[in-house]
Image (cartoon, rainbow, N blue to C red; front, side):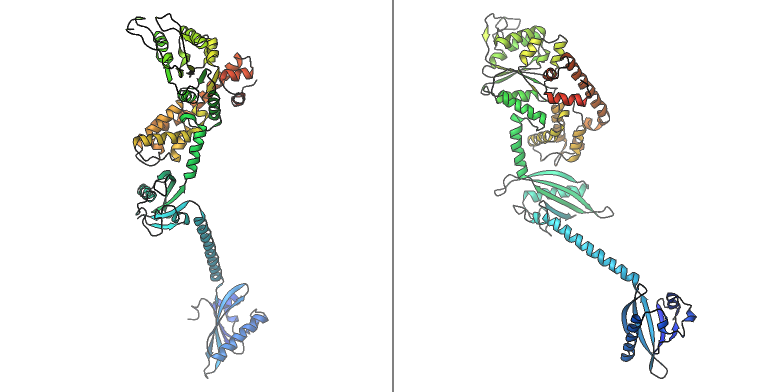
Length: 557
């Protein structure tokens, strides 16, 4: 039995002599077991202070006849000592059974556990403090949509949506709570997170408040679904500021606040005070017609009509008759007099769209018309006076066509009294999220769907695309997504297939675009004899933009 004891055990006489010691005691004292018997306890390596304390405990055990337990430290280790008084054959208590349990490892483990628990408690308190101090509403729900944790911002959300611990989400009639319940159910069913879901909450005391909801699934360490965590941010003030900024930055429906677009808006404001001829340039799909409409709407002629003529879509004869009108019998099929677009635009603005594609003869007639504001209807010799402002638009490189002899230089300079250049979408990608959001809201309202915007996966895909069709192509892409998306934010899979499959060739396309742009700048520099001011004017950009291009395309001047 004594050999089976795994802790130190000694049998000591009242006089302080070791009668027996087990193998564990011998090993810890650095002796052989047979060397223990007959030794004095004071010879076992204890200092006088430790020995005195132990002897006092031994006398206590003898005096009371009951075991004494106490903690002690020896040799850098912690022990729990137990003194059991033992009666001799004559009935007297003349010896002690001493048990020493080494609790050093257990004590250290306990201390580590205590420290870990204290650290966990500190972290818990810190997280709790952060959780409740965040101004966004944050709460978690289990798989039954019962709210388990909720911060102060959620409990205090205006309108009392019922975001309270222990309550089932969405059991109130509040639109925000019901929408959050629907979105949380979707996340629990599919395991997908939802980002930037926009909710406009109506109500007598809550009119016009806008919330942004984000939801992520909650899982345990094995990936098993536990529920979902929802954050709700009140963006009413931000939305109002964005709308105000949009009103200030984008005239008549134009969207964007990048430096290039701000220059466009400034130029449109400048044109509002004059009646000069304007040339609007830019690639197809950049919004030239929208810019022309903004120029008209802000001009003194805004009370008159805005009449558009597509110069590229009509033959030479038809374009002349369409512009200036004709009299009866002027040509086969002219059975009656017809008023031309110039007369129809009287008091307003005439938009000559794709003016770079007109024939040489029509270029001559347009030049005369622009210089004198005079014209004759087809088949009539009587000269008439026009009362219109002319805005011309083209996606053609008119300076190049002038250099090639395909477009009259005098007509080009007559059209380009003031030029408004619209940048391609690839040069204003910072405006892409605002443009996409504006289109999404427009189509969502038209289709009667709750589509608050686009999630990050869709925006990443849109930013990665080269947009050869510019804003028009973006508009069609978002319209496609709004048709496919049933509700919730637009995700990447809702966008047209060509945006997904065209990724591999985009780098090559961008390189090709860059090469074309570089050649265009070099040609303009050569025509202007490397005069940067003249080159910038010919390209329709500021000198600062030209210098940026020279650096970008590594053109040495």
